[in-house]
Image (cartoon, rainbow, N blue to C red; front, side):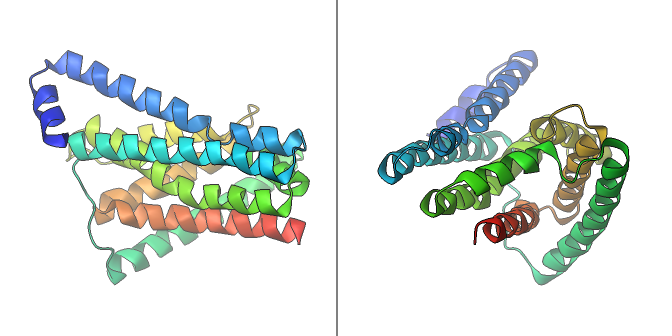
Amino acid sequence: MLLIFKNFSERLGQSTKFLLHVIVVIAITLIYSMNLAPTVIAVYKHYSILKSVLYVGFTFLILFGSFAAIYFAYKAWGRNHIGKLTKSQLKFSIKVWIVVFIINIVLSILDNVVYHTQTTANQSILNGIASNSDKVVLIFFILDLLLSPFVEEFIFRGFIMDVFFKENSFWMPIIVSSVFFALGHATGGDIFAFLTYFSMGAGLGYIYKKTGNIKASISMHFLQNALASLAMLLLLF
């Protein structure tokens, strides 16, 4: 089926193919952006455990559906940079992640000084969900956070950087994908929040470009979300 789809797309003109790529990535991103909606509704409506779990089930359906769609699109049009994660790639990725972490600390301090905020709006929403959740629902919510890097990396690094840019293009795909990544996470017009997520996206994009392995950027994104999940667990327990 994948081969049939690739053959079909190769027959299209360049402008038609570009439009198809845009439609596909926008559609998948919009669907994925709704993945937390059922969980948020369950939390703030204070539904019963059974009903809440059913709502969270819809979250996972959206999440896995988004992953299947973007993985299929990446395999059809991307460069298929999915290889074994080596020790050298992992060490390099950790070094980049440490630099990004330091940059984010500086941006957080500036954000606190200028806007008097302790955390980004996106993180505040996550903390609010954590503090209002039943423990069972929170476990599912954290599982979602841990699985979301797989979808986001295939969208922002794998698809956008591979499909819309030439292979020898280095900084432009990193910048463009980081802008979209930041726009998808930063809310409220806080420039430092935007720069925080932009730096995260740039770091992940740099890792992807330098290692040529999407597993490297996924692993660092997973680490970032794991730390956020740990912070939420500490709020509850």
